[in-house]
Image (cartoon, rainbow, N blue to C red; front, top):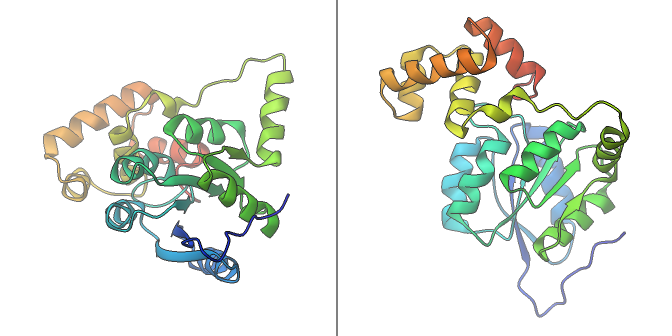
Amino acid sequence: MSYDEPSSDHTPVSIYLVEDGSLVRAGFRALLEQKPGIEVVGENSDAREAVREVRNIKPDVVVMDITMPGLSGVDAISPIKAASPSTKVLMASHHQGFQFVRQALKAGADGYVTKNSNADEFLFAIDAVRKGDSYVSPKVAGALVESLRSEDPIAMSPLESLTAREREVLQLIAIGKANKEVAAELHVSLSTVKKHRENLQRKLDCHCAAELARLAIREGLLNV
């Protein structure tokens, strides 16, 4: 497994980083900038802001975390693809469970690596997705194999029953935002937020903000 450097007469592979951890983001940038044929063209800690920048920059590959404030990486995949259809999305997360890779790939991710992957694997994954191939970290693939070998069927995450907007509302409520604050951040009416909240409580069988927050943390939508 090795990174295939573009020849000198080719345009560098452009990478955009979406990661709320400043140290992790700096580490990714430092690694990538060492490699000939790769250019980091932007970075952001906010997935919603990243979608707007990707629309203008149109990078070859977006490397993105899953658990972030405001808008999760999973929910940012579709808007990124809509903003720049040629851009490939590689998820880089500390989550190794099958539910996370299932949700990411279902949302349109082109690849999935874990943050404890070594540098060679990370670079190989970027190279694979920018060429149009898919890549899933062996550690994540191992969880998939174990799930398929299990006698118990793979349970769907309760979050899979939610729309992308409902997931956004859930994430904002879970971090303590009041209905008015959610409405202002998402540019929707207060009545719309109240309806989303009712749907969340019904679908997730949660009856207060604290229960919604606990579920969001358990399902990896929020960091503790």
